[in-house]
Structure formats: structure tokens, C-alpha cells
Amino acid sequence: MSQISSQTHAISINPATGEQIGHYAFESAEALDAALTRAAFGFSKWKRKPLQDRSRALSALAGALRDSAEAMATMITLEMGKPIAQARGEIEKCAKLCEWYAENGPAMLDAEPTQVEGGKARIEYRPLGPILAVMPWNFPIWQVLRGAVPALIAGNTYVLKHAPNVMGSAYLLRDAFKNAGFADGVFEVINVTPEGVSTAIADPRIAAVTLTGSVRAGMAIGAQAGAALKKCVLELGGSDPFIVLNDADLDEAVQAAVIGRYQNSGQVCAAAKRLIIEEGVVEEFTRKFVEATRQLKVGDPLSADTYIGPMARFDLRDELDQQVRDTLEEGATLLLGGGKAQGPGNYYEPTVLADVTDRMTSFKQELFGPVASIITARDCAHAVALANDSDFGLTATIYTANVALAQQLTSELDTGGVFINGYSASDPRVTFGGVKKSGFGRELSHFGVREFCNAQTVWLDRK
Image (cartoon, rainbow, N blue to C red; front, side, top):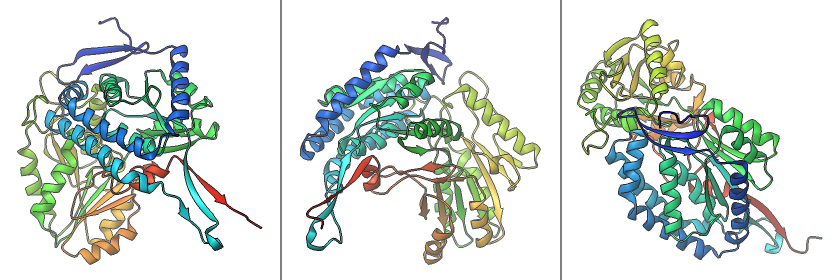
């Protein structure tokens, strides 16, 4: 096993131990071609299935996910270090996603009337075809299904290229589709090199592309999709502001900030990364936040009471550690943590940085790990200005007793979502996506269903 190369194999390494737990040879050009052929043939059948049948298939998938929930959650934990309780929650969230779209998805595809007289024109939503999905490791099942399920109910098929460190999870998800009765080609998994991804994007059998990942990856995939004149959706990074105003309930705000920053060991795109606190309460908020963070259990991710496990990749821990060091050298104050945990495993100490300014690294860059940055705002207007002073625009949170004010501030925030007195999350009932370098396009809700549809005009007897 020690001779297996990342140039030829996707390799899974348990971040809690550093031990290799799986390796999967990259597929040949012939295997990729066969997968794309299955996806294209599967599309020709799947798109013609009645919506009721597609809904029943999603309901069956919910059952298959629950049947294999423990195996899938354990694989997630072993491959990328997510604490087991959170991994179990991820699978249940996916099952509920399937059920929600099984119930609500068909109505989202109803023909839309127009203002043409006599009702002679309408808009129909037709599927595009096989969708190539390049997905990340931080939510190995949820990230895939929140894009796949809306696309599938619309009649598209899905070709998953997952992150190399979570291919075990990808194959368990493929098994769940098979166990739910899905035909070959409706949901395909490919294990290919970056060159294989480029080949798939250029292939005429792929109708569109979606990616969740880094800005760098989004630029590369977006450029290739554009060169092939194919629609793409990019869900990229975030450095989300978490605004706390002077009149906020601090206990609630602290609790939400801790969850929003440290869930999944801080490896979440839409998370409370920049804590922007109005100066009248910054001292009290900081004290309570540090104390609450200190209580979080760091440890074995297979233990049910662990809240923070190891980071998923050793190279990303090194990158995070350098960002923290740079921020401290720039003048921030270290209140908690601040370094790699001692001992085996890829752990990073839960870290709190205070006195962070808009010129520091942890303000300007996305920190993808268990590190919180506390920034002081002079007043509400300054808080909004700080929030918008970012290359990213995924979500924002506002905590205040003045809900009317918060509602007004939503129009001032350059983000894809704003959460008032609650931390950000993805939910099928509302759309998810960002602006600026957080990407473009939308997932979930009816937007996710129609994102990969051809909005077709049908007009009878136009004179």
C-alpha cells in the first residue's frame, strides 16, 4: 500500500490516525467513455418516466440511505474526520431532502402560463441531459445530493466525480442508488484524473457542469465549461460575516456563533468565519465565546460526544496554520488555541483570534478550519461595511433585537443569503448560492430544480 501513488490512485487516509484506509485506481479513458454512454442512454429513458415515478424513486432513495446510514456515516468519519454524530445527521438530512423533493418537486416543473392572449403560450421545463458534478470532501453525501436530487426530479441524469479522499463514500452512495432501484446511467460515479474531468466536460454527451469547491477550481472548471458552451453552476468559498449588534441576545448569539464556526471542524463554506461585533458588546461577547469554545470536546471522531475531530487533509492544516501565524504577526491577539494539536492525527486546536482588522490575513482570506476571527465594529453601518469588504459573498448572519432594522440591512449585504437571529444553513425549502467569488447559479428550492432545465416556449397559433 505504501507504494500506491496519488498520480494513479484516489487515496483515502484516515485523518485521525494518518493511516491509509483505501485506494482506488483512476479509471481508463475507455471506462470513462462507458460511463458517459450509460449516462446518455439512462437520460433517454429517465426523462420519459412520469414525474410520479421519479418521485417514487426519490422516496425509495430516502429509504436506502436510512438503511445504510451507519455504514455511510462511519465511512465519512473514517475518510474525512467528521464527528460521527454529525455524519449521522448528514445522512438523515439527505434522506429528508429526497422526501421533500419527492413531495414538492413535481409542482416545480408545472408549465407556466404567459401573458399571451387566450392561454396559447406557456413555458415548459425540460431536462438538459447528463450533468457532470465535481464535488468536494467536506460533506461527502450532502454536497452531492443537494445538487443531484433536484436535477434528477427534473429528468436529468448525474455523473459524479468526487474528491479523491472520499471515494469510499462515493461508492456507498452509488450502492444506495442501486438498492433504491435506479437504473444504470441515472447516477454514475467516475474516478478520474483532472485530465479525465476535462475530457468529460468537452464530451458532447455531458450537457452541463456543476462544481462545489475552491475559487481556483471554479475558475478552471468554469473556463472549460465556457469553452464548450455548457452551462455551469459554481458553489465556491465563503468568508461569511456574523454580525452581532449591541442589542442582541448575547447568549443566543454566542451559541449560534460557536455552532456556525466549529461544526464539521470548521470546514464549511457557509460558516461564521468573521465575527463582526459592535463595540458596545464586543468584550462580553468575546469572553462568552471563548468560554463556550473552550468547552467543545476535541477527540476521536468515532466517539459520539466529540464535537471537533481532525481536519480532513494534512496539507490544508498546514495552510490554516500559516494563515493563523500570519494574522498573529500582523497584530491580532490569540485568545485560545493557535496551533496544531500534539500527538497523532490531523488535529488543529479550536482557535479564537481577537483584535482582527480588515488588513489582516484572517479577514481577507477564507480560513477553512476551526478558527474564529473577532472584529470590532464602531456601529451598525461600520459592521455592514466590514461584512461587504470581502471577495466572497455566500451568506451573512445578523443578531439583533431590532428585527425591522435587520430586514432593512439585508438589502445592503452583498451575499446570496442573509440569516437573522439564526446561523446560516442549506435547506431544500430555500435556495442556496453566492455572489462575487463565492460563485454563481443556485441549488435547492425550485431554483435548484430549474437550474438545469431548458425553459422551452410553446406557442400555439401565433399569427
